[in-house]
Amino acid sequence: MFTVRTSLLCLSQALKANMMQERTTSACLVYRNSHKLASIQEISKLSEKKLNSIIFPFKDLERYLAKNVNKMNFQMFAPSFEDIGNAERFFTPSSKHYIDYFTSAVRIDHAPATAQPEGHTKKMNFFKVGKAFTVVDMPGYGYRAPSDFVEMVEIYLQARQNLKRTFLLLDGSIGIQVADQIAIEMCEEFGIPYVLVLTKIDRPQQGNLLKIILGVQEVIEKQTLRCFPQLFLVSSLNYSGIHLLRCFIAHVTGNLQINEHNSISSSS
Image (cartoon, rainbow, N blue to C red; front, side, top):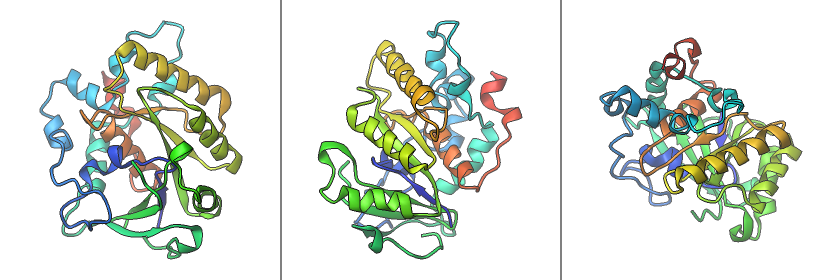
């Protein structure tokens, strides 16, 4: 079993938008109506430009970058359209592939001990994604963090041996804040692999968004050793970047091998 952690902010906007059906228990958020662009079949009907824009939202901003800016880290993970489609099945519930709320825990000794798949989050919520991996939705950090944040989250991050990746979500309308810096430093101190995800990218003007992206990328390149070099950009409003993020999750959990030689980004 592979445990994917949504780290210290809720990944529900980016990850669970197409995961929950009415069968999900009331203990978690239920998405009864999938986004119209959640299906790879639907976005395949779009023009190539629009398709690339949804899967690789950075492409809409790339032309505004100065020529001396290194673009390599912005497009390091470049799966093919086929890979994107193959990843979708892990996030689509079916009669043989359940995506379920599993349990909640308020401290590490309450966390599931089994090695099998298993906003305002105030405890660790575990979601089984079939037999592939488990997503753990963790409490937020900063001034709204629960009083037992250290006992709950930090100990979990240090103790969980089957942790595959931690995702830190940053608000795309404001960029990295002091609390985000502290979370990054914590991940670096613990020596755990993690990823930065910039959410709400539909909110700021393009110029401000690009400034925020470059600022975050500079932090990744100059202040981190354990962070994945590529910043992931997502919007739950227009589904930008979510297909790519889901594909990355399927890949880093060992469930999907990708063919980067036939990637969308390299062919366009």
